[in-house]
Image (tube, one colour):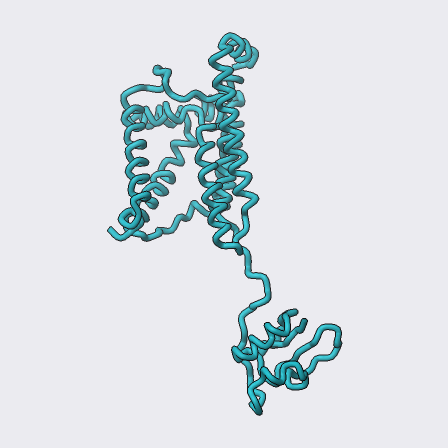
Length: 140
Length: 164
């Protein structure tokens, strides 16, 4: 290994800690359905107003994905499920950088995609709260 | 202060006399280079100005000068990307998932230190916005969860007043 992982103990420690937290969260999500277990973080917007925020359903969707239920996950939060491959690519890219020191093209790290993400979240957040939401399959 | 015309026919400056002597010693300026002393209104050759006679190499014929870098022009500023992402995660954390608050705070602090190390980078405003939004969303999360725990009945009533 030639990357920052080998060069700096700080990078090594944070990478291992990050991976451990991610793996632990996935195992917890797989074992305990957020729909029926109350120890998961709650959404303040949903708790106070009853509206669905753009992120509502993410944990339940991830739980369904760990059980292979793609359609159920898509119904719970299609936006986050659609973006999962992007997140997976960015995480893989970080790991490759940490291990080898090579920076693969980020593509989606360009500023325009950041603004597109904000715009997409706002539009999705509106769409899933209008009466049509059930037709769009963005409600839970 | 002096302005000069480089070998690329572009104007550089204003620069100080000391800077001009420095450039002569570096070979960027020679006796034939056109100079405009501040307030003079007329372009002259360096050799015509007595204050630089000592700095010029003796008897050197005017030769084409090496095109110089834009030494005195402002460097093209590049916006720090991490600062922008700090603000974007800050917006997301405040609008929706407050759990992203710490992410935007960390990104904002890293971006600020990057900008400090590379002063030609811009975007410190974005970085500060990200930190502020992250802190605000953390405060919102703490206050909101406290209210949820303290007044569950109030929230049930509030939820019932929305048509969902």
